[in-house]
Image (cartoon, rainbow, N blue to C red; front, side):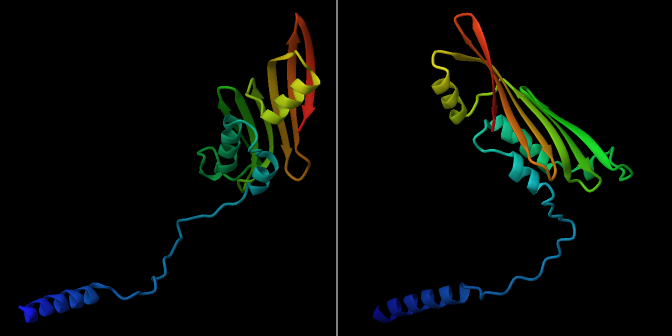
Length: 167
């Protein structure tokens, strides 16, 4: 019986040892069909602000990832191509060059939930006033400074006050 138990244990250990496959270096893979396009990274770094509402950052990321070269209208004969991205409360008009890089954008988002740092600034400087409407605008021109502006209308006791906050 003792010999049988030792034989079973030895067989088990040997079968496990031989079931392990030796590590082999991966063979090279040809990735001819994959294109890495970090073309609009400067747009993303300049414009996308994670403090803004998700709807804004989603549309900005959509514009950054858009590949004009795959658009049926694209033929490479023009210097610029304009694409309009829209959603419920916002629009981005993006101009791409013939290589797919964003040259400029004009962005407008109406009645978004303003980030906390803007709301806190408004309420601390305008106690008792409520935000009635807002408009967030971004202007991107390639290598120039990005302009980000919030236009806000406040109301209190039938009065109106308009604010302009540059971010």
